[in-house]
Length: 300
Image (tube, rainbow, N blue to C red; front, side, top):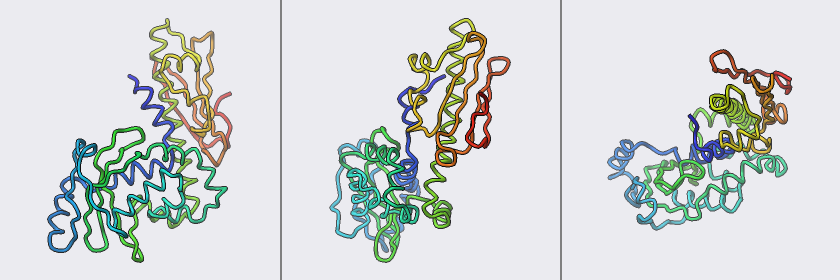
C-alpha cells in the first residue's frame, strides 16, 4: 500500500530545477533503437568518439573517452562539475534553460536555494563519460548519471546542439523551450508552483492511505500527524514548509473517529496558489479537492 519512506521523502523534496536537470537532462536521450539509428547514420557524416554503452554494469566499470576541448562531452562535464561546485548560474547557462535564469538577480536565485542544494547533492562525485556522437550541429553524449536523486548511476544519453559555435545541452523539449522564451525568469517561479501543488495533492493522498491503514488496525480511529510519521506512513517533510512550500494540518474529529487534512500555500502566489482539502467519505474512501482560495485553508 505504501511506497518506501525514503522514496516518498525524495519525491516530496525533489527540487524544481532537479525535475528539469535530472528527469530531463539525464533522460533526454534517445531510445536504444534511436541510438542504433544514430550510429548507422553517423558512419559517413559524423564523428564517433566512442561506442555507446547503455548497460548498468558499464556505469561502474566501463571505459571513458578522451574529452576534447570545445567538444559536446566537455560541455556535459563542465555542466555537472559546476552543479557539484554550486556554480548554478554558470551550469544552467550551458543549457537551453538559459533564458529562464538570465533575468534572475542573485537575490532571486537564492530563493531557489533549497532546490539548488538538492541538485548539488544529487550529482555524482565522478560523472563518467564514455560516449560522444557528433552529427553536424547535433550531438549525443553518453554518461553515467542517476535517473533521479539518490538512484544508482546508469548510462544515460544527453542531447546537445551547437548554438553560435558553442554546444548547448537540451534540458527542455521544444514546447518547454518555447514557454521559457515567452516567460523568461518567471518560468522557474511558475514551474515551482506547478510542482509543489502537485506534490501537495500527492501528500494528502498519502495521508489518506496512511489513515486508512491506521484505522484498520485501531478500531476505526485515526491518528495525529506525529503518530503517522512515527510509524513511517508519511515523511516528516509534512511538518516543514521549507522543502514543500505548503503548510499541512491533520485535524481529528469526534475523539479520533473522523478527520480532515488541509494543505495551504506557505506563501500564496509564490509557493502555490491552490489550497487542498482531504475529507474521508463512506466506505473508508477519501477525496482530495483543491482550488484557489486566496491562500486560506479550505476548512478550518
